[in-house]
Length: 97
Image (cartoon, rainbow, N blue to C red; front, side):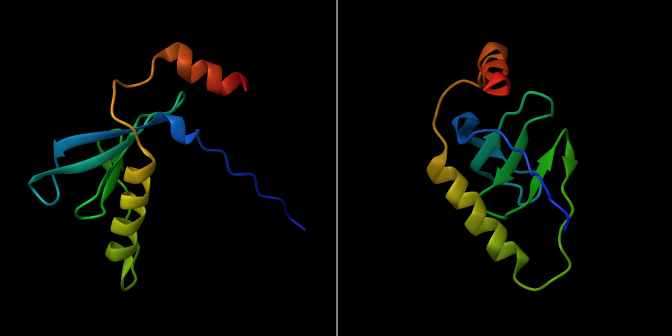
């Protein structure tokens, strides 16, 4: 039996932003997840697209993916807080935990 371990940062590093989405071309709600070893990941709450490091994440080839992605982005929006991005010390503290 194979064991899979998936690591992701704590939801403490989710931030709410209002930015222009390059996909739906309007200013809308965005969720940003900050991580220590990776570029921030951004989700658009309007179109469901996400990207990291300036690269658009792959879109699944199936029906209904956009509705699911928007729903997931809205869930992250509810968990996120307003404020400045976390400092390096905060992110490193998460790594040590």
